Amino acid sequence: MRYTGRMANSDTCRLLSADEPGPFKVLNSLSKSPILLVCDHASCRFPKSLGNMGLDPFTRRCHLAVDIGAGALTENLARSLGVTAVLARYSRLVIDCNRALLDPGAFLEFGDGVIVSGNRNLQPADKERRAAALYWPYHDAVDEQIKRLQAAGTAPAFIAVHSFTPVLNGEARPWQMGLLWDKDRRLRDIFIEDFAAAGYVVGDNEPYSGKAPQDFTVDFHAEKIDLPHIGIEIRQDLIDDDAGVAEIARVMHKIIASIPERIAAAGQEAYGAVSEK
Image (cartoon, rainbow, N blue to C red; front, side):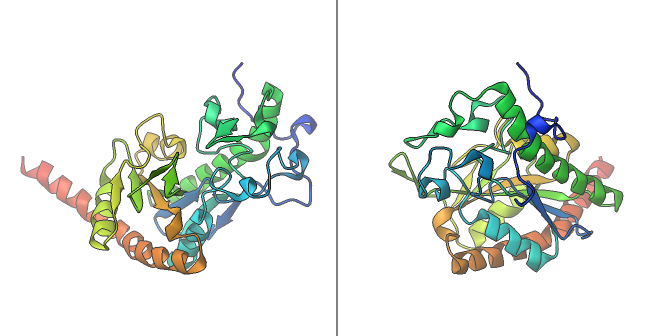
């Protein structure tokens, strides 16, 4: 069965109570800066209606549930740069906003030795309910901000912020920053140059790949309309406290602030090269 998750007004699809936060948060919703930050895995919050999904308190706050530090970093950057950011407000264990709905990982049942009992034997109606309440409102909010910035005369650079564990399945990961990209190298080239110059060990499509069908949010919103885009993964031990977030934000602030001018300059160079032929 193919489910779309767009039955948001149906009583049978209500997941959140009136006293719970909405599915997403938008920062600087009136900014006209040509940058859009998104954070799919910003929160470890579970809806009250789902209880603890069979998980202990540690698991509900570990890397399976949230990209540690990514939400705080995104908010820090949005404030310091004055740019728009959209953040998901519920755990990816409820529904992963960076997966296609038919991807088994959208409703993770097992990961890193942990069984997510609250996701086992989900019926299509259960998935519809979560998608209607959390997934589509978040993605619709991202689309709304893209369209608003386009209407203001800017094609925003689209930056998805994530974090990754220093060790996975017993193997240490040497990268400090990971750049996820597929066909568009514009932001990849900027970040790989500047992160390396700042002294970081940079993974080029490591520790994950941005090649399709990975990195759903970037593909779904940015790649299809040719926005400059990148998925950035920061190793979690670099941003697992306030001091770490502040330091990485300082480095990324400088890079992101330079993007509009560098993208424009690259476009002019490309135009000049074509004109000379």
